[in-house]
Length: 415
Image (cartoon, rainbow, N blue to C red):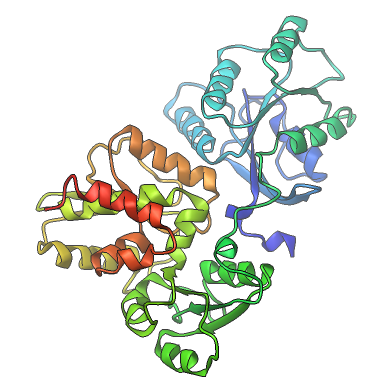
């Protein structure tokens, strides 16, 4: 069902503007239902509101309504604006909503998304009441910035806005990046090594495994799922070796010993790093693990806010493995989950990120960009685990450019 499409696989469309510009009314009109409370009182929307829906022909989208960016300067108002601005980094397509006025608020939003090359549309609301400034319209036309006049009350312009959304959608969205389909051919078999994860709800698999199964089937290949304890048994039953083996990062050790070297082996997390972000950047960042020492600080960042288990990978296992690898208990680990990603990263020697299966690619690339701008290495769980267990070269064998990025980074600072 479309409502079950993971958030990270949806086109995320953000609504930005001043208070009472008509953002919430516009979202309700597009959704065809009262998703957000609408009132003449400025500041009715206090926190970002998300509405997943199907928008043909784009498919699954996520509309995100935000608080007004001109909130009062109190501490509470400032917090609301900060929450709205955090949506900037995960926005695939931005709607700058205005009731025909235009000042520094709209100009700042426009400049931000233009600098990031994020597709955007200017939406003039309340078209049944007033018309936009002709000089502003001329300027937008000259800069080739799409704009639409809409009335949420009468429905005027909604069809034009839907067409503009389709035209402005990021290139390639309709043909989403494959997770592993470009590594195999039709008729190939793929061995998915899937430990029974304690963090997955009973009777279900974790999201990266489900995505890998679906992508394998979508590319007309055979999908073979086993736990880490039955790898050898499955391989012995096959007449033709699998074209690719993919393992959960936590089972990398046993998988590397059980899967023959002639079969390419990688992990779900590494595939996600490639699909959702920048695998070469993650590989280069892993080299920073070799430079950690007493007093080093590592930020462990996760996309979701799952309830941690006793032996949680990000909170327990990875810190333990890295301390053992570097032979010191003096490395400090700080946890950040969900949207709580610090603006100031300069206090950290490394950012260690989860696979980000619930994030879209723009959100991951934005975090990588934040790290790069502040000179902080970035890597993810799968790449880090492969490195500290001494099997990164094999785990990146399907991606030689990424391994070259790791070697280049390592040659400048291995200790």
